[in-house]
Amino acid sequence: VSRVKALVQEHEHQFEGIADSIQDLRDDIAELSRNSLDRCDTLEQQSYEMKIDLARLTNLSERSLDARELAKTLEGRVSEQGHVILKIASRVDDAQARWISAERSYVSQEAYHADKKDTLETLVD
Image (cartoon, rainbow, N blue to C red; front, side, top):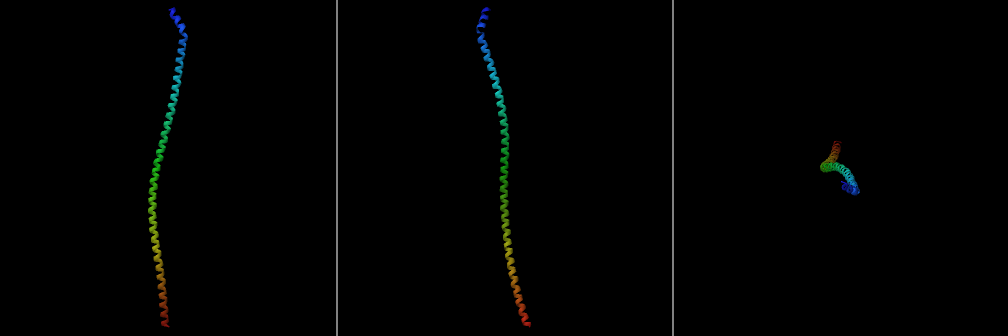
């Protein structure tokens, strides 16, 4: 028993060093665990934010596609309206030409009737 006590006393300093090393390792493991948990929380938050950003980008992409489709539809409608306007302009030109022709015809007939009237008046006199 005394020999065991002597050995324990002789190696007590080494046991204390081992116990201190074990405690240091426990502290390091605890710190690493806290750091790992903090890092996991940070990564989880970043992942959540990235999911939100992805949803926003998806929404913007869908809106962009909708806007492109709307632009194509509007472009088609504008083109159709342009054709309609050209047809109307052509009809207006035709109507103006007929108006001018009718006006000339009226003036011509008026002159003809005035000439006939003068001729009749001359004959009556």
